[in-house]
Image (cartoon, rainbow, N blue to C red; front, side, top):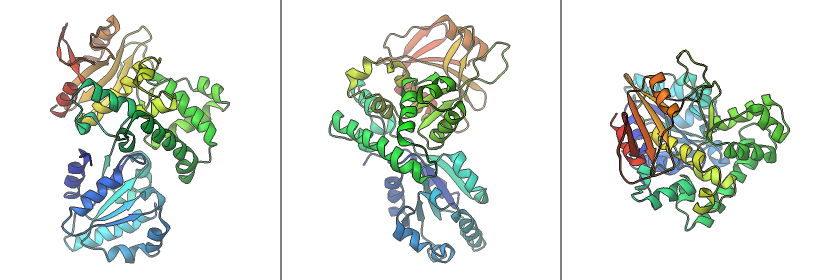
Amino acid sequence: MIARRAQDQVSELLTRFPAVALLGPRQVGKTTLALEIAESADSPGLYLDLERPSDRAKLGDPEQYLAAQEGRLVVLDEIQRLPGLFEVLRGLIDQRRRKGLRTGQFLLLGSASIELLKQSSETLAGRIAYLELTPLLLAETAAKTPAQRDRLWLRGGFPDSFLSTNDAASLEWREEFIGTYLERDIPALGPRIPAETLRRFWTMLAHEQGTTVNHAVVAGGIGVSGQTIARYLDLMVDLLLVRRLQPWAANVGKRLIRSPKIYVRDSGLVHALLGLRDLDAVLGHPVTGGSWEGFVLENLLAAAPVGARPWFYRTNAGAEIDLVLELPPKERWAIEIKRSSAPSLSRGYYIGCDDVKATRRLVIHTGNESFPLGDGVEAVTISDAIKALQHA
């Protein structure tokens, strides 16, 4: 089993909160991680899968059943299936607080975004902490060579895909994953969207990886309205499958691009949606730059300290920065991402750095060493960039 950096984070949160919600897409490893934490608890934990009829039957009277588990960590998987449980959990947590039991009672697993789950869990305000489990990160796979790094980029970070015996088996897993999500998982969450229509939409997003997507153009491509496209995009963001990177919002006295950049969050899914079977196919495809940018972006944001805020910067005049990362209390990093070991920067990057008043200027490249590039810019490897953020 690959050690997940989130394990220590979840365990620490359970020492401070009665409930912790661990969120992430399906098959990302939430259940495995939760069982590991439950088994290491002082007393054996209880695991309930709310998609399993037998486990749902145990919660016919949830208050009575869960009250009887006092002193155990209860893991509730796919919590969005029973949003009515949040009210019950609040009552139990408050009862136990009066007895002096304040932490480590419930670990909730969900396949929806923090924002979506919060709509159902407002009753637990002040009693719950949230943490996202991403697909595997570079730091978790201990990739030390470019080949190991590119294997993660090609296959993506879903454990079963990354750990497959070969690239063909990995692609087969990802294709099955996509099909299952479209045909079973998304309909089970409520939306009734034709699977083939949603597949075409998801594939179009993969083609446009890392760009500002024009809703009207995408809508015309799959034969639906612009409003429908916005609804589909909201759904994919809520399911933690797509990231919307917002444009820089500060007033710099220039005409800024206002549309967000869109990324399919797992690079392996990008490649599967586009039918790219191996690294040579990826490197020969126009999506190479966008796919690499999205891969680096996900690793950087996972390493960023709590409170960091990500943006991109682009003006109509051509000034552009791939990632503007605001770090507390007053740092602002301007990060450019290049799929090259000999990176060069456009004049637009330097203008953008001046516009946003960057305190640190980085270009992330694919070489093996970090070095000064001149004009205050540091050329750094992705590993060094991650380490810098972890210590920021």
